[in-house]
Amino acid sequence: MTVLDKRQRHSALRPLGRGRYWAYDALGVCGARDDSLGHTNYTLDAWERVTAISYVNNSQYNSSFSYDERGDLTHFNNYAGNYDRYYDNDGRMLSEYRNNVI
Image 1: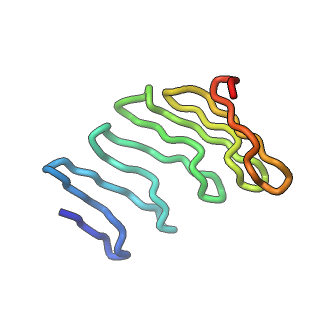
Image 2 (image 1 turned 120 degrees about the vertical axis):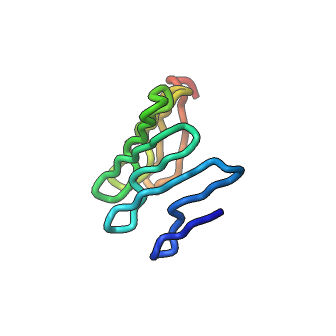
């Protein structure tokens, strides 16, 4: 069963009896979610880009994200490792390293 809020965004979904719930701020940006992993918080920067995801009940899955001045994702880390991305002057990704290995 899907439940939409008054702005037609998902606010609840119950596939196979499991619940998923989303919470939105005044601008309509999702800031939290509840699902099978528990409660999840999203930290956003001034441009509404995700800079961190924290899982309250499963902190080993926490992630963080960094961006350059153009908005390109330059670094992120999660349970699988640390990733660095490098771009040319036109914003095309040149390479991606995981744990300092290309």
